[in-house]
Image (cartoon, rainbow, N blue to C red; front, side, top):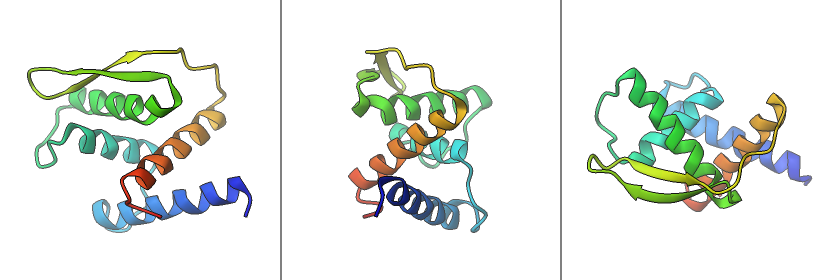
Length: 118
């Protein structure tokens, strides 16, 4: 099976499982999946987040997801338990479609590592 087909199949599996768990089966968009990764990484699963905190959760997720690619590295946890990352390498200029593929690939890899999918 081609690499793109494997990614597509695994991405659909992630979306299906998360959508059933968090959105009553309505398919989650990429941003929603990124948000859920941020909540998971923060580890404060059962609380409500303010608008600015939601943006920060997405930032945490993007940093964590792109860490294996060498773009970010974990730095420290602050006094409230929020992780902070350092930029290691600037992201290359990517078109919207390329950004989407990179993030989907990183999300699939994240959930493979967490043994959420196989």
